[in-house]
Length: 367
Image (cartoon, rainbow, N blue to C red; front, side):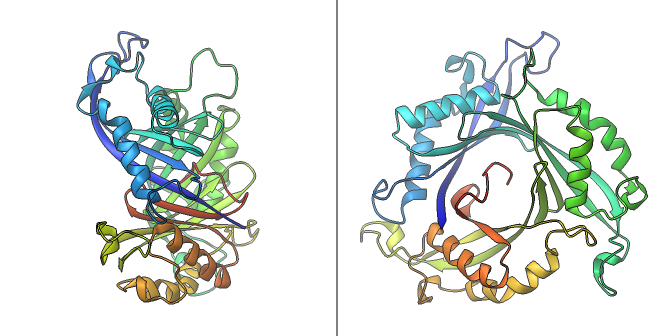
């Protein structure tokens, strides 16, 4: 059984200061950010003005919710405007003043490298992104496989930690994550990963679990490790399950069948969509991966070609042109050739779109 989650995002420019921090801390004084807010919710049928307008309506309410924060001093609205407190302020307003039901996640990204996500239980997962440049090869792939040759990547790692676990006197902050990451940066950056103990077969999955095993004793609150091998593919590990994703973009035309005549969504229009395929499987002990990224691309290519640079409203078995309908259609078609596929994200703009997943198959935070 599939479940649909709608996602909407918007940005705002704000100044702030965090008085609770020490005087010497860079965030104690007045400074500013280009914030990016995201809300994800499971919305009931009939909540939006018409079927297919859920993302547009959710985005409209989110924009109205954060409007007082745009080009403003956050301290006038939030006493200690940390990323976590901003997210909690937004969630409270969305639920109580803007009547958004079924909220599963509210996220605040304050820089390209940092942010906080509130999960469905209200737990705050702080995250920090790190980058390292390294070479590797996969020794167990079949002869002729391109990953069997020594090559390199600009890897990215995101460490996610649940601030609401444990009994720390102080919340986990970005500086603490930096301290924990520093030795790994020295060990990994500008090195050949195969030469590092434990990384003889350094797939994204193996790197994620290698980091987990070394970080978890120092950071009991660790909730996920995310490894980007490229900008469009990577893996998540939570101590038990491996997940990978492959991201593509497509340029397609749509129209919404249920939009009233006066709505611009009723006419032919289009988007550069971001499509993300999520797959979950047991780790292959020999190959060190769940599914070969190359196989994902090969098996999915015919489906991709059917929707890229195409008028999607001409696809006979596509119910409508909204992102939820598109994601569900892709999930059905994709599982026929990639049975490990259990979630599809379809975004029409950054952070705004729909997520369709198999029920009970995934938490939403690692993206």
